[in-house]
Length: 507
Figure 1 (cartoon, rainbow, N blue to C red):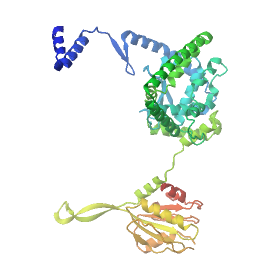
Figure 2 (figure 1 turned 90 degrees about the vertical axis):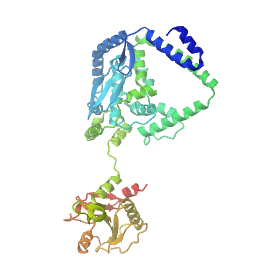
Figure 3 (figure 1 turned 60 degrees about the vertical axis):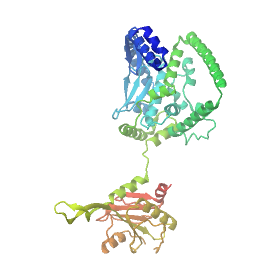
């Protein structure tokens, strides 16, 4: 189509859009063809640039291997860190946007420590890389890469950096060198976090964990976003201009000093650290790309931690606060609800009943069909020997009733003898206690047998100051609830909670 036709179409308002589209297509068709390549990470490069990138990448690999070997040797006095490092498989990647990161996505029980060789060659001091490896191992020990990611991701990555780059762990840094000493301000620290979160109440001993630090940083980001949105356009424009001038002057001075004093080594390492610790959203997304929940890795970390904990001298120079955090992160959290759920699942009885709503398979509607149903019959047996407070017993019974609300619940009181079974079809809000005097739990099972009662589970509330031999029947159907200062629990008891754990369920 010639230019005259296009001009005529453009003059017509109805066809102006068509003319614009045709012109764009013509421009694209007549544009000079340039050969290009897409590097890993989606970065567009020309053929020459991509060829040069591959060549530089291959040349950097042996240099990185030597640097990593030197960095790992500096960790020889940190046996705990080296043990966590043994979980890692070092893997170079070609993505130019990657610096150094952990990857647990689909890796089985291994953790990939991925790095870009071109980035790593910027680090001129082995102790700096050693410190970065040290902090990556702390991420592993604290389960940061296997924790479900929280968003915004930049706050999540920044919170992890604040916790793992603890200033008390800088013993591996060769700080007697001026160029290394000048880099200390580049690393995150508690002092920087406290300065950033100075308006928040924060306890270093209790609140220094990933979720708490992330919540504060996220709140700060939202507040700063609201403040910027409320500012006027002129004020924002002036502020940005001022920052730009300041940054240019600062960068210029920094580069000049680096070239004069240390032949550019400090400046190159500084640039590598800034890229590595970049907390922008794009950089944080790339750094945490391989962070994903991985139960196999979690199990390996827990086993390693328990192995190290058996010998306290293996922790090396790990500070007390981080040591407690690592032990807490690798201690399985006990949830009393799981005990109740397992007991509830173990006390379900399946039975059949006749129904006219379903035809018999053999005789059709001539005879009733069968329907499979489930039921649970629970007996709550309370010790009334006088060693437990009435309020505690009533509260425990109420919680149990709420949890087994679909079961047929009966209750009784026992001591030297067992009282009558009182049946209830729905949970009771009030319990009236009777009796009180000697403690023999066998009387409960004897009463069930003598009265030919049928229960799928028995909840025994007691102080456990007795000797109870394993019964011949129903041993796996007994759930023991005890006072906090209870006696010795029989070894054969499968389900046990104390009052404190029971009351935590109702919080």
